[in-house]
Image 1 (cartoon, rainbow, N blue to C red):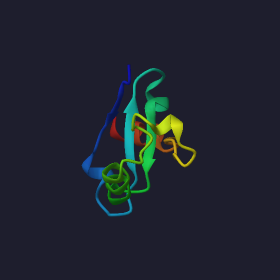
Image 2 (image 1 turned 180 degrees about the vertical axis):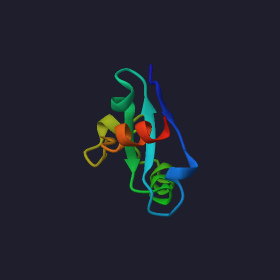
Image 3 (image 1 turned 90 degrees about the vertical axis):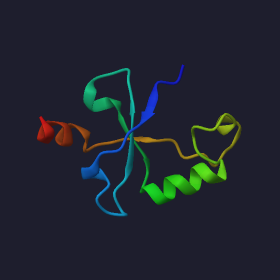
Length: 81
């Protein structure tokens, strides 16, 4: 079962260059956040093209870019507490 959820926060979407982050439960709070894309436009292009990591056939392709842990998550979470 895929528990990853796309989330958006106004503070992370204030410019076109803000990354798109996703939440995947199953670890400590800081370790559950991942960067899906460098920005919303890039993520939408991947989604519309059907080439994202979340597509059913992603494991069959060599060009799939997997989400990376979001290193700023702990700091952002602490700042919002």
